[in-house]
Image (cartoon, rainbow, N blue to C red):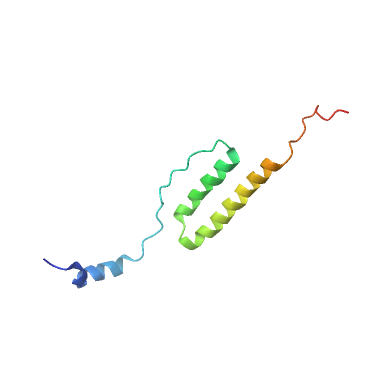
Length: 86
């Protein structure tokens, strides 16, 4: 029985392979039914193809969009064209 960790051929192969690239996590995103929120959640998929240091920009953009969607829920409804009669 041989010990692969002691085999210099295995170590050399690992060195030449280089670092692995970004790999998608495969997380399933369930639609919420709110178009604005669903668009932001879909934007998270953009981070799947970036190196870790590129995730921050995507996460901050999604966070900003989700905050805007929540803020819009607190806004008073806009009156229709015939609802503001005196």
